[in-house]
Image: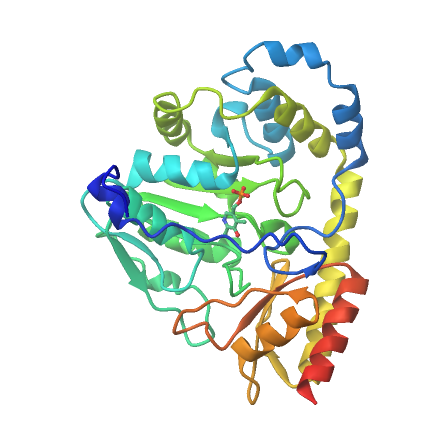
Length: 351
Ligand SMILES: *Cc1c(COP(=O)(O)O)cnc(C)c1O
């Protein structure tokens, strides 16, 4: 606590990201991709003209937005880009959710949303999950400043089909519905095609997970022109240049290599399903997942103890200290070899 901090800053509870260890551990705690970015990315980094860094980047990121629009089947004016999708979420809170009414979200979802609620003075209404720990779309009301959730959800991994999202949008029409699709590329169904008919739908995505570029900080949002303009107004009142010229070039190179993208995500999906079966045969309960992680628990072994046991043996997973999740572990999907080590280590801890 410092006397220099504003009252607001004194009261914040900042988001705590998963640890980035210095030691060489098998790192299955922050849902990074175990495979390298597209080969074209390396070529860009090698050949990027250093002199370009003298100039400010394009404030509208036109080339990157055009490339994304082509990939996602929308118009460039319906695309917004940001320094990671976390930044876009922050801008969206300011643009759409500061109305004095509560923002609705599932009680279990990405833990950054409550942090932004505090920062931007947005009250939160937490909605219970259904009996299978899925986001209960029926629970969202029309008496809120908006709705936000991840689909597939984190850290549960369950993803709703597009038709279910359409059902939600047929009821909630007068406030923004923000669907965070950070994990949609691993088997989820994207709601982006619904943007054409629903002017209150904003879908965010990221290059961090399925494109192996978490270190680059590149995210995007797709929505109606109205919503994108709202984001632009906040962005241009805060930071006109969130995307540097190098990140923009790298992002475009990543989008150009569809084959690499498909191969990596298929490998992650295959390894996920294999790992799921192996963990189940060790007696773990594993929630079905459409993301690049599994949420697991064990009837007779304590998750916190397993976390420590794995850590001591060089494997880092994520343990959340909340009432609902404290007997679960979230395990990111790594390479086949990494998951072999995980399963073998858990096997020895189960004995
Ligand atoms: C990882 C993650 C993000 C953050 O993505 P960045 O683009 O790296 O900021 C956003 N939402 C969810 C649900 C995530 O898991």
